[in-house]
Image (cartoon, rainbow, N blue to C red; front, side):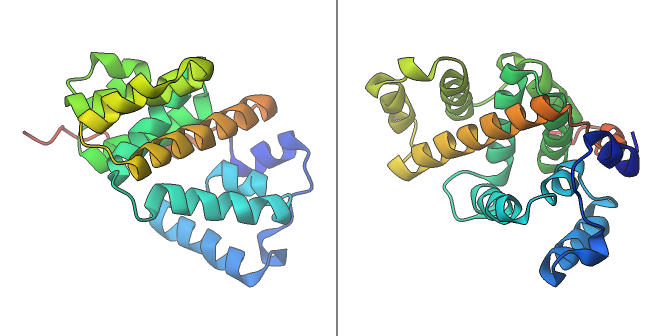
Length: 198
């Protein structure tokens, strides 16, 4: 589905890009430059700037701000949570990001299908187990779950970041499902070269 068709299907009051505030026009142009397209989620969110700005600020802080988690680990959380929620948009977009960050197309596919099938270090597996438990059975999360992470070297701030990222993608997954948000078709072919030899 083209961006235009997607926007028309949403039937939201999405302003033309040249009517957006200058800083958002510049951000959208940066997306065009770096990705070659504007992600549909950003186009959709531009229908309400009071919601879009805090959404974008939180996304940037969680995914690129200072943290004990690598950018790859943050993308892995996004994919594991989205896999639990069967969110087609986020699995497609963040699966591509895992392929890019890791240089390993197979890892991206494993994360989308079932992260437990991937050959991951104990630290990353525990991180994803925690994020998925928060997603599926948050009321069961307790001190034992946090201690597992501490024993593997995660700090209290790291645990906060894992939980915050998991919470963010649980929110975006639900919004994507509620609006039938479709991923840009370009994501499907991105970063699918040969895996880097390890």
